[in-house]
Length: 285
Image 1 (cartoon, rainbow, N blue to C red):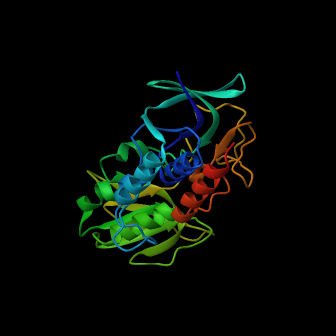
Image 2 (image 1 turned 135 degrees about the horizontal axis):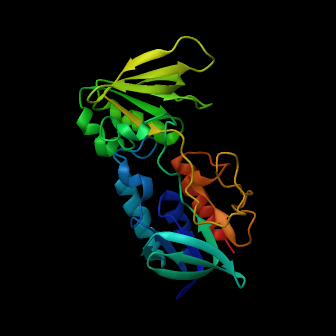
């Protein structure tokens, strides 16, 4: 059983940044990630708001290299349980157990859902969660993105480069500035089509007549929650299942921290995720 000062669960931008900072501060550190590091960055193309020409996998590779060079180790495994035992944390994974004085949860958000009946029936028939993966399939065709926040905007911008039109259906409080796509404030009620998706029916926020938007695909970035099934039941969460922390990233449980999009107070920007990871990684104790 391996023993560490810090275990970081999740290898996205926030987690890799935290691991690098912790290792640079002289702490032994392991990054536990089921996909080998990179997180959601591995599924996005050119990153809006980053230096020109920087794509998600490029940034992921750079952050992982920084963490490993600093001395952090990478464990590719699925976390199945997190238990407080003897004043330390026991992190049980699909590839063995780890003990750590402190644990940083950088788990991001699970794939979203529209929350409509028969949603799963549309998988592979026009329902997607990854513009970089499936966007090229809809080159020259109309598409819809559902969601709010940085990843929804990123998906819409990426799809705008290939689709004939992009509509972002959002209920976010802060509306993005249109950049090659239309924005509709509302929520999707149903999907329509025969052999494949042909349209979405949207209820505008505030009421009014529903709108039918022709589309060949909908990329879902709404209804996303952190997957905390492995975590203690008494870990404090808000009504959306996001983790409640103080300004130092501490949760309500001793030695357990949380950073990035999984947190209720997250700013939902890539820069903020990296900065929070660096700050908390340096100070975690």
